[in-house]
Image 1 (cartoon, helix red, strand yellow):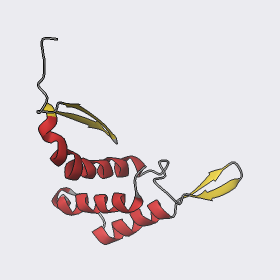
Image 2: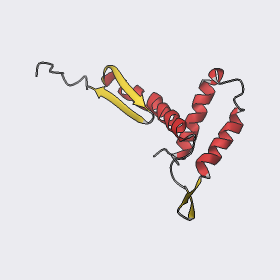
Image 3: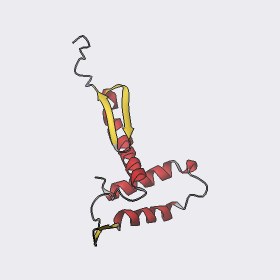
Image 4: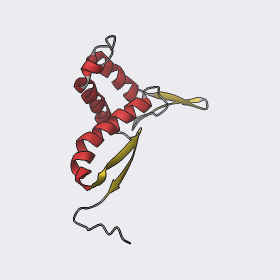
Length: 116
């Protein structure tokens, strides 16, 4: 599950680093972040005839959930995983879909026996 604070900061990071690529009618960054924070922290859903407030993690039923997950995981990938493990990938083979990652890893300290 995506920590709410980490996810919101990840989205802010992407927006600030790629601001020149946003559409001209994109809302002001602070307004967008305030709306995202409300969506992520005040999510209420209906189950049967009862209402529930999500207090931990990410409500995946909201319209922004997929983009939020992609940006959050992309930030984690770019700032943590790739710097730490890219030297161990086989020809840089890392693929991602939403918040799932596939990488082919090889520890350079261990010889790769291609004949067996």
